[in-house]
Structure formats: C-alpha cells, structure tokens
Length: 484
Ligand code: NAP
Image 1: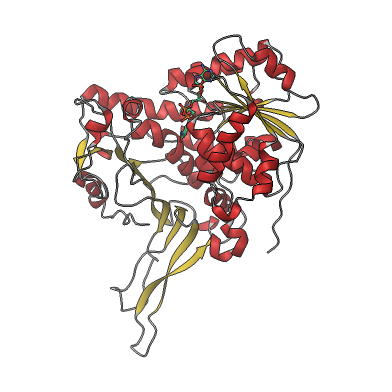
Image 2: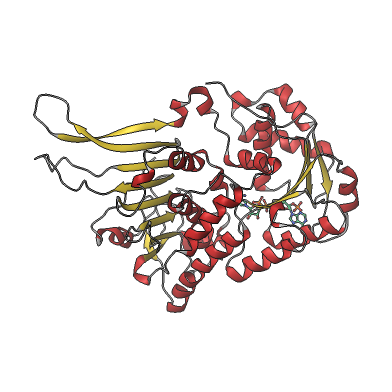
C-alpha cells in the first residue's frame, strides 16, 4: 500500500508552555515525526514560549533531548533532527504580564497560517487569548488549540468558553481531546459509515449492550494533589469516554463535515438520561505491596475522590432505548487496555442442538494496545464431531493489515496538530458539546457529593472494586476481562 502524505500549508506554530511536560513528551516529538514524514513544510516554524529565560539554542537542545527520549530509534535521523530544530525558536513570555509579546509579534510572518497551542494550565487560557488579540498577534484566520481540562463543571466551562469567545470565533478554537485523534476512533466512523454491513444492526433491536473500558496500570503518583481535585469522572468520563460513546451512538451525519459530525454528537449527549446512584460504582486503589495507595498519593487522608468509576448509562432516543452503555475507567488496574465492545443479541431462533457452544457476536474495537478490531463470530467446530458450534475472532490488527504503513500510525497529537493547520475541526470538541457533557456530569457528581458517598477500596492490579462486577451481574451480563 502506498503511503499518501499530503503536506499541510506553511505555518507558524506558537506553543505556549513549550518547555512543559506535554510539549516535551507529545507535541514536539509529534511535530518532528510529521517533519520526518514530509507533512510539515520545510518553511514552517515552531516558536516555543514560556517564562524561563533561554536562548534558541538552549531550547533546541531540550527538543533534541525530547526527540531522543520519545521518538523511536529507527525514526531518529541526525540530519533530519538538525533540519527540524533549525525551524524552532524560543521567546520568553509571561502569559499574565506584558513582556515578550512585542517580540512574538515581530517573529510572526504574514501570509502563513498562525496557530497558537495553549499547552499551559487552563487558568492562563484567558490571559493568553486576550494578549494575542490586544497585541494584534492573532488574525481572523489564526487558530488556537486549548488543552484539557476544559472546565471542572458547567459553570467553569461556560466561563472558559465566554472568555475565549471574546477574542476568537468558534471556528478558530480547537479543543483537544486526544482520544479523537486515535486511529481506531476515526476508524469507528469509517466502519460505521463506509460499510453497509453494520449500520442496519446498529440499534437497540440488535445490540444487547455496549462496554467502553479505559484501563490504566499507572497510579496518580506525581500529580496526586491535582488529581484529587478532579477524579475519574471529570478527568476521563466527561470528555474521553463521552466522546467514544458519542461516536458509537450518533446518527449518520449528512457529510463528514466538522459541524455535521459535532451536531450529531451533541444530540447524543442531550439524549443521555440522568444516572441513578445504584448505577454508579466509584473506587480508590489501595496500598499494594510496597506501592502506596491512592490516599497517600493524593496527600489527602480524607480523600473521597475516585480513581475508578463504572457507570451504566442510558440513551433515550429511538435508536438506543433499552440498550445500556456500561462505561468504566480506572487507575492501577490489571492491564493498560482501552476498548469498545459491542455485544449483539441472540438470533431469534436457534436451529442447532448445540446451544452450549453458542456465544454472542461481539465487535471489539481496540484503542490500545495494538489498535484494531475483532469481530467474534460463530462457526462450526472443525472436525468430524457433527455440527458443534465454536466462536472465533475475525481479527484485524491495523498494523498487520496495513503492513509498514500500519506500523507507522501517527500518534493522536500529531494527527490533531496537522488537522489544526488544515483548519479541520471534525476531531475537536465544539463549545456546546463540552457544555452539554458537563450539564450531564454535574448532577451525577453533585449527587455523590451531597450523599457523602465514599469510593470503595480496590486492590491494585485487579479489575477494580467488586461492586462494579455487580453492575453487570444483576443485568445477567459480565464485564469483558481487562487484558493487554
Ligand atoms: P507543565 O509541565 O506544568 O508545563 C507548564 C508550561 O507552562 C511550562 O512550559 C511553563 O514554563 C509554562 N508556564 C507556566 N506558567 C506560565 C506563565 N505564566 N506564562 C507562560 N508560560 C507559563 O504542564 P503540562 O503537563 O505540560 O500541561 C500543559 C497543559 O496540558 C495543561 O493544561 C494540562 O492539563 C494539559 N495536559 C497535559 C498532559 C500531560 O501529559 N502532561 C495531558 C493532557 C493534558 P515556565 O514555568 O518556564 O513558564
């Protein structure tokens, strides 16, 4: 298969927070890979901004170190790295002060796309937007990219939207949810809307239930104090799992167009029912071996913040009424694995005697590791033993199916940054979508805060609290095993 890399237009990309963790681990290595892949035009430039005083060369040395650490050895080409860092400069700017802005303005070129990545704490978004506009650095074609978290409730998300809207039109604002940049997530739309195969069955009549799992093995150590003000519902469900749910549940958009797609996702969020307390299980990982538990990591002995959550969610519309969506996400679980599993219903009548061998059809969409899809189907067990049934996977690993190209799947951040330059907002959340998701999440969070619910402890390295098993058991269902 021939790789089709279409270069984007020439750009000047300013990364506020260019010395931070996200820039070092994801943004700069990702840009290097796009440069290596021929997608970033030679005459494009990257300008990093942060408060520390530093020369261009000092910053370039940091970028080289980041590439060394976060880019695979077979992609590190000394000559290409030299060319790449030559396109990078650094300017010292305090987002809340006045120094550095004039220098930034002088650095920007006319006639190229201007993009500004706000890779800083959300409390600085407003200050940066205001100064970009007051200093005349942003033009009407400029784009801004804002990181998560986008608010911690509906009120703060509205305030953030309002402050950005004072200086930028919605068409200029790119709210990142890196889950939407994952290859498999986009493939979900291709599979649904470029094939006739699944869509006729894609409804409550044929789908028994949907499971969405995002399991991590890491704890919150290192960022426990921040995490304790957030928790799994705010950090993962309101944004990432919600976006996955939307892509599974939405109606076909009339066109693969940013607003058409986002209109359909918004309708799903608005159709979500409130979640009953008995349909929520929250957990906190316990101390295990010589590893501290959540409470020690958070530094808050009385913490009631969840590091795990499982929810049963209903969508009240014609397509989904009666088909539950079970969502779960947590830290320090058995394996690092993210997947969507769509379990179909039984055929209306079995003509086979071998009922025991029968299992449901399940379409599994793996987000990590090893992105791909798996369709579990029934076949005849091979051999002369009569008509006995067995289940086999129709397995499609993208890396295997697409050969070398599949191995070179761009990281979510790379893809999303290129989409910003292309001016394509399809994979970015619109302001009303984020607000609708908070409008759904807020009463759930307020409910457990009002009741004073405590999360259940769970052993690290397991699937989470025992109670989460009951969430499905009582419906006659089971969670899929969490495994890599
Ligand atoms: P970080 O490591 O703390 O970096 C923050 C950056 O902002 C540094 O470059 C810092 O440099 C700069 N900065 C701080 N105050 C500033 C100011 N007043 N003016 C100008 N620059 C300032 O944070 P991070 O982990 O990279 O996160 C950045 C954003 O991405 C946050 O919104 C975070 O929630 C989001 N995010 C991060 C990750 C991740 O994996 N790290 C994942 C998802 C989302 P100076 O101190 O030199 O100014």
